[in-house]
Image 1 (cartoon, rainbow, N blue to C red):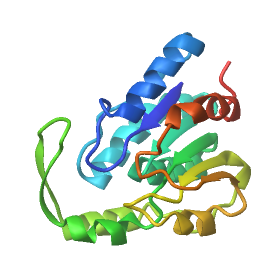
Image 2: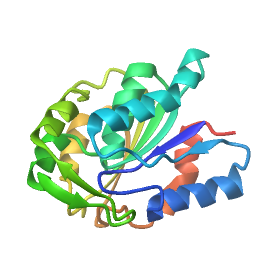
Image 3: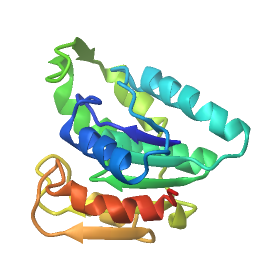
Image 4: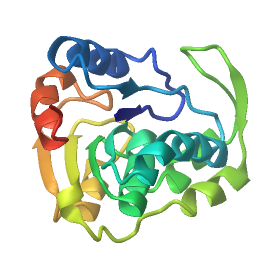
Length: 191
């Protein structure tokens, strides 16, 4: 199974999630794909993700993860904890710092769901931090230097031993992401 993990205030209806879905339908139609709509709190979101990967972990099936932004942070945690491979797209490195400026009421632009970002969510995120990457061969990191939300250099520093693609320009959405999907699928060893 391939698990796509969306970012903060995103959804399975995001353009990147839809690109993954279309690409797999066309090129890997027999590969199961899960794109969950994540809960708005880090603990609840991780509980959802752990429940999704539990069957694979139980039988020793390697995890295959694609994570964007905060989803990349979650994918990094899951890959380090359970093994497998992860493609991280403009991943958040220290979301417990970044999301401080989002404290308070929020509305998801895809689902229109109202929720609140609370200080305890920063503590929950910090508990999921993978400060040291112990298995760099597990990761392919895709970055664009023009990311207006995250400082791509934080990811370069954290994942410096991992396979990495750094493109000049672009933005947080990862412009022309679909060009990376063939290499991402090869890295994840999709049949």
